Length: 394
Image 1 (cartoon, helix red, strand yellow):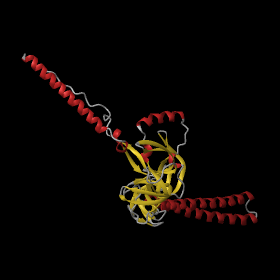
Image 2 (spheres, rainbow, N blue to C red):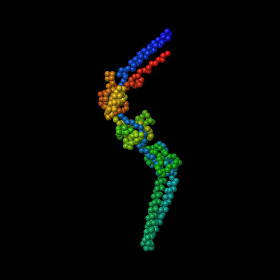
Image 3 (cartoon, rainbow, N blue to C red):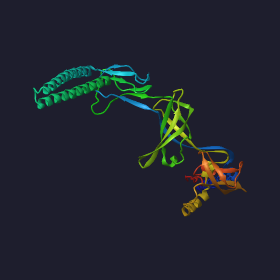
């Protein structure tokens, strides 16, 4: 008798708990069944200005950067310029040990003097030979030899002078001078270092001609380069001054493409004024080029253009498969009407990645467009039944 009563009590407890679970599930469903106004998050269509830009990274460089080299080899004897020094055109930057070139110059000078003496002797012999030939003391052949010796002496003098000029030039090259006025941005050598100019001229200094005028060399994707034109306004920032925006203009879109891993980019050169000289060569610039602007445009949030109802998404995919050639500048937004969402097709224009210009469509400023389905965004398990309540029988 006690066993039957115990079983009956357990069965009664199970039935009560099941009834409580069913009632709780019913209340949970009612609590999660929101009206359309509560379910969908909306945002107002606005009227305002919009600017479309294309972005890329680039590097700041001087407009003119001169690599100063040497045409002769030697050991660095003296340095007259260092990093960040301002130099003028023709100013001495460094000297090479010129002992060898001075010796070669003295040797060639001696050769000139020797050739000059030989010429004077040949000239005297030629004049004497002409006198003797006139008196018929020598033959015509002997006179011709004297004339030929004079010509040869003149040629030897010209050769000696040319060699002397070459040696003087090499001696002058041992003093390195600045080819332009500017600022030394790099020094590649030290005192005592040997530089060799046998096959390729080594770089000794790098001089920026004018740091008040700089340029940005940036790489833009081929999808963006079609909208970029010369003289377009440019805004950019650098890591050194993250809270400051700088301005420039598009100077050139270079026609030489660069292809890396099947990605084609083009070098866009941006002209930059740097009167304070706070922008330095080599800085990374984050470039935004203004390609289009509109005033007092009707603007719809991009989130509204991205929003697709759950049931409409599948239908949209089917329509897309049937009409792949539809116009790209067409978008669809949804509005609430009688607690139901209604699609509206719009012709759209430029975008700033937050809002998009509306060119035409049945919508006006102040209208509320759907940007989010809160029921879907609250979690994937929201429309699922709660886990089954299990009870272990004792």
